[in-house]
Length: 473
Image (cartoon, rainbow, N blue to C red; front, top):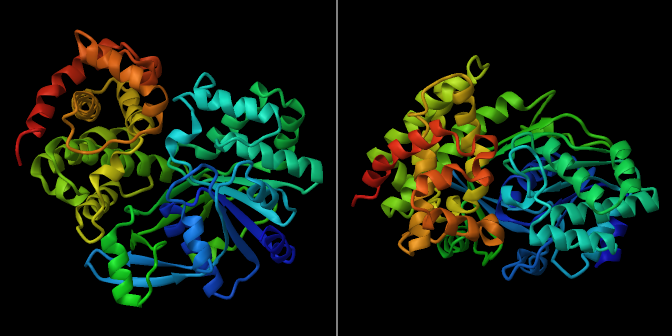
């Protein structure tokens, strides 16, 4: 298989994507399909899983000639079914990741993109690598032995080492996760990783031969379900276990900083810009933070779906206030029509067509609080603004932690950071005489704001409002 893939790639340029999840298949590959449909066949798409996964879609895709169905649901509820055939190969995880490394190191591969979720980058608010975590220690040990391990930094380091050795040429590394300044943050994380691994020569090569464009991505992509598979079967006649469902809205904004060419994405709706900051801040603070707030409040109130939670007047009110009274002061002046953007975001979340679940959005909240919410709180403190409009969100998250620890949270909660080091943090907070003070003192969430008395007062004052959120609906 690998020999065939490399042979096919020699006459074309390739994008290798690391992380074969639903979002990648609903977003990046949908844009690549649009290019192929427009007659642009200059680029190939290969995707690979870099971690063990009991539900690895690569094996399913291999049985389907790497094709799958994308169910696109409009706000009206109307559904369209698109066949995605642009994926040339889906590489399953195997120890050593030989196939992924070989494709990444090939001279025809000009872009390596990736989606590993926010928590998969091991970075604090200042971009400092959490080098003491067990997973990163294992990754560093593997890197010193010339192995990729299963973290994004270890895999990228292994690919880049081979490119250096083979003289394969420059490479663009394209993060597609919801991290603020994601390209620069990944660049900083990789730089720190290589320093800790003692790979100064590779670090120098990376500085000279790679770029890390910032990006902003947006498309709600619920987890696949039996209902999705049944709809696809009824609409297409195919029993497609790799099918993905998503909303019709999609956005991809990319800093146009590529080292070795790129697809003509601007012809299929991608925005190639000099800087993504203005798009990124509005999206992260308005959309991503609100999405998490709905999930936190929805889980406490016992809602299963995001649209059900937002239709709860209490939750709608707090999210609207977060955006209007809390976020807007920190974004203005803005070239974006913020009121229209807010209304569009809330309309998308309130729609019941895609059946997005609270459980899915709850995932990796440890990274989402500092990534999506804390920057607005930090700005309001800097601007000497009241914290009352924004304190309800961290209060909701604290209550989620308390309920999860007590075994009374109605929603299942999965979190990479929680599973690595967060359980000790949760224990310390929940066992404290004053959980609010303990929570506000935790640098994992608050960095330099940890222990700030203004924070303690505001979140303490917001807790009764959270209690009201937990009453029966």
